[in-house]
Length: 371
Image 1 (tube, one colour):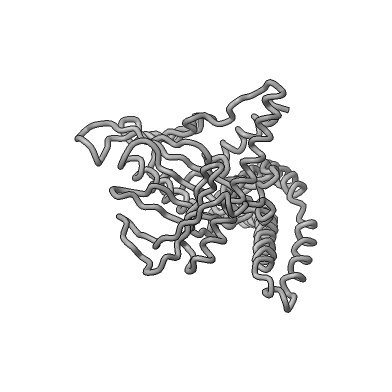
Image 2: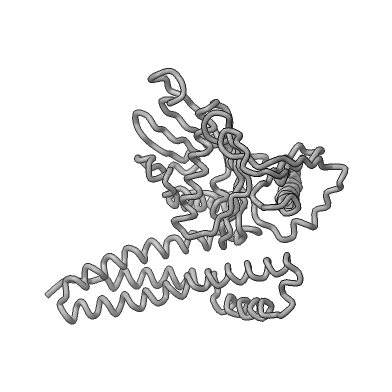
């Protein structure tokens, strides 16, 4: 007779999932989906392209969120049936399958539990991520490209739609900067803990042999905001430059001046877009990102002023939030949470969920401590 006592583990899993379900509120989601489906079925929906995209994107996000909750419910029910069959049939193969499924469900529920901590104003939105190389020459531009691949692989593993909006290639190796959009529920809340300065230490493949090089890259994460158009940007405050899209090494990949660079003169914020086919589309996308950054800048200034008046100015993000060591000890370590991985290869291949989960929990603990 096989021994398969998973009842306590399953009961604990159901209790955690019940708390998650209460936060997500599937009934509310279903009502929102019904309303959005009605809007999406309107015959004149695409007369207003911008509104149509908002409706279809919101519908897709909510359907995906409800689908995740429903899938876990089904898997929990199926797991209990599988355990019962394994015990009654004295089936070792089914018992092994039940243990494997329990472990997988525990990870899935833990991921959902982290998501319930994402209760910020914009956490449920998609994200626009910008990576910029910092100090370190060719090593820094190469590092920026490594980070870009890391995040794109992470999104691919989660089957999140991604659109690379702009890439500025370096003359030597790697990229000067890149901007991409992740169109998935809670992408901003999830990826926002990745914002900050990342540091790479390794034996440089570009310099003298056996010489250690430290290089830096900055990651910026902002939400996709439909209301960004509410921020007025006077034409006199911006300079618009058009140019041809380019590939690696400055090679032109477009025969028309369709790429757009917008500079906000009062703040110095620069946004470039070259992903779309037309100059008009690239300008619209660049303006959307610029308006979002200006809105967030306003909010940051207001928050900083409040902290100043309260006498509690504290830096929530250090200059270096994560270090990647590719020599000697071979380690990736988050300096805020202490979370670390002893093998950098899978991290650079997109396996960063552990860092993200630890970052979200750390941020929530900081917020709770400040209350």
